[in-house]
Image (cartoon, rainbow, N blue to C red; front, side, top):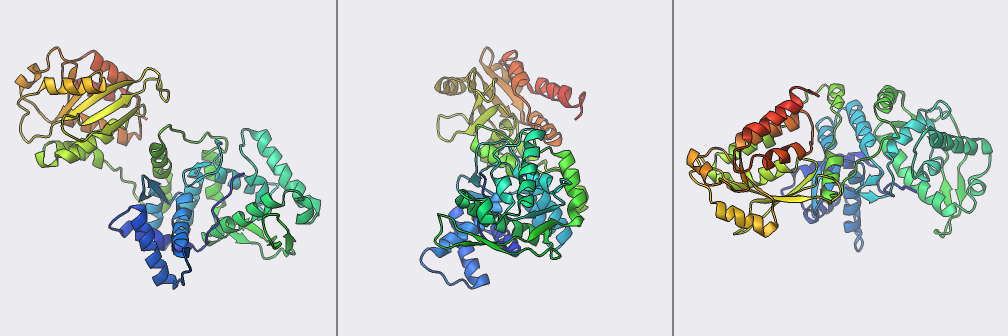
Length: 463
């Protein structure tokens, strides 16, 4: 059973909290929580009791986190790509609704904010698919969410059909809630309370509206987990007609049976989930999409500025991690390489993995010499198969320093242009072809061969 966060449904608070995070001087979780507590006291005049302030601050972080608007990695809080857009067009309610719908379509069952269960499902694609089924009439009651919440997976049309039949059986039963969900009271109340918050959020984002023409009497149910009975509201929530075309186009584009993203690296998965953005949204918003080439630009600009040697190391490491079957880390300290990378030919399995090391040399002029003994020590320490030396330019004599060694040279300009292509074509390629180039060209400059391979991939087969 998947259950949504049970917090507030005050959409304006989404904007205030995200704006606070966007302007914060520090984005660590503790500082953000403290800033939210101050904002809650100032904006909503909270009167705290015991640890209620910490709990409220956490709720105000967790809810936008669940809906894909912010994300957390290693104790730091970041704003997702979709929320950057929502923040930009907040005052335009129609555009704001569209972006939120796009965000919902991207949320998968494996949600870092709340480990719901192990499933490949994108739950809100399922939710909209159910609403748009001709037998459901674009309407759901909050109790009917029980049947969606009890779905762990939807693998084919048959399992989807079974879900629709369950909802229709409930609608046609004419039984009271307490009778229909007898012996399931605890799970039902959990799903009901959770769904109430979710439906109210969708109502505030102008995605759903209450169908006031249909009057249904409230009922009650007693859960073993609660002392008092729970009052059940049977209002019909209806999909607003303004959103039907967009949702239909999204359901055509994205299958409810699509497998969710997976990665053995939690931070990488979180980043991919929250920074994925469907570029079609820019056309709907009438905003020109600009590709961010800053990583490619920084690699070269930092390489020719000796004062930026530290930034150069970090950016090169980011670039190496753009290959999907590499995990690279910057290594700090004397006697260490600048980065150590694990290449996994059989990704995600570690079988057959190999380690290689890297060294960066930022210089305004030519690099006059290379110390192969130091690079060899790095390789021995990490059992590295080879070292990649990345620098903007070097004297011809420097190349002689690495003859017969498991060392290759890659120019920072070539790396910059390679990464520019990765960004342009939104690709994270395999390192296999590039590893082959290195193995077959040890103690040489591999810049042209690397760039030729990129040209072969993208220029002759544009995506």
